[in-house]
Structures are given as C-alpha cells and as structure tokens.
Image (cartoon, rainbow, N blue to C red; front, side, top):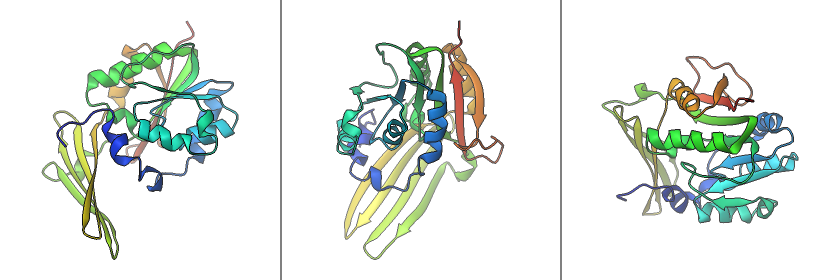
Length: 244
C-alpha cells in the first residue's frame, strides 16, 4: 500500500471491525445522551454504528457522516441502522443543513486525519455545524512516545493454533505520525490491516478548538468522568460553541 486516504481504513477493516475488542459503549452513550439533550446529534465517521445505534435507542436523533460505503453497509445491516441518516462526506471538511446540539468523534478517529491542517479544518467544520451552546466531544488515546524504542514498536497480540496477530508500528515524532500495521496470519495466509495516525496533544487540540471558535470546557480520562491525569491513557475532551 503506497497511499493512505480517507477510504483506506473502511475498505481494509470493514469485514473484521465489529469482531474487534472495542470498549463496551454504554458509558460513552450515557455521556453523549446527556449532552445531546433533545438533539439532534451528528457523529463524524459513524462507521458500523457501535455508538450511534445504542444512542438512537436512548431516544437521541442521530445523523452520521462517513466516507466508507463498506462501513455504512455494515451499519445498514443492523437492527435500527437503516433508519439513521448517513451522508458521504470527508470529516476534514464538510457542511450540513441545519444545526446540531452535539457532534462527536470517537475511538481516535481525529487521528486518522493526516495533517494538522486537516484536523483544524475538522474543528472548523464542526463549529459551523453546531448550534449556539452546542457541544463537540472527541475521544482519543493519550499519546505516549515512550512506548517506542528507536521510533518503532512491535507486539504479539494473539497466538492460536492457526492464527497469529502481530502489530508493527513506526513513529515519527517530528510529524506526530504513527504508521501502524496489524498483521494477521491465518492458516498460511497473511493479511495486512493498516492504520496511519497523526496524534495530537491535548493542548494542541484545545488550540485547534479556539482557532475554530470553540471553547474547551472539560476533559476527562474516560467516559465515566474519570479525572484526566498524567497516568490517563484515554482522553475525552468537550468543547462548546459560545452562545453569542
């Protein structure tokens, strides 16, 4: 693979995505439902609906954006998934009709945008989509460059009789990019599942929000409202469009 673009993740990962050990979404749904109030809510990179479907079941009107038809097809095949309005759009730069009380971006997906300019553009697009007083919530891992040795990292995640899953990463601290490959060996067949990321520091994310006209208002170490500390591995950041 020579080029990573907005469609690459969905085209490579859609068949295995729902079988991966993602966190159970109840705490995220509880958190988002309180902010959505009467809605509507907009999920950027809605994917297969891991969060959107249970949020709709809580009575929140949810709309979605995604670039991957393969991921959206997985969403459509689930109970309730066909009823969620989803529009094909690049989360780095989009426009919507109307205004939203809540926009949210979960599971490190902000980092899928490959440059600071694209990430800032995402914040600006969200700011334009929110109603006054509306909130933008971003969930991401806390960057930890110390886990890399000589700017690389390899780990064996699973070993079975006919299956091995290995992760191999390269880190470029000058660009804050991680080139990540998940290598699946199954009965003599090798499959590659790439995820190229450009991480941001919390302070950098706050500056992006301010440049886009949003206010940083809260930050937690997880969806249950855990304090954000130096030991936090996860970051849930809440931004707000000012009332005036």
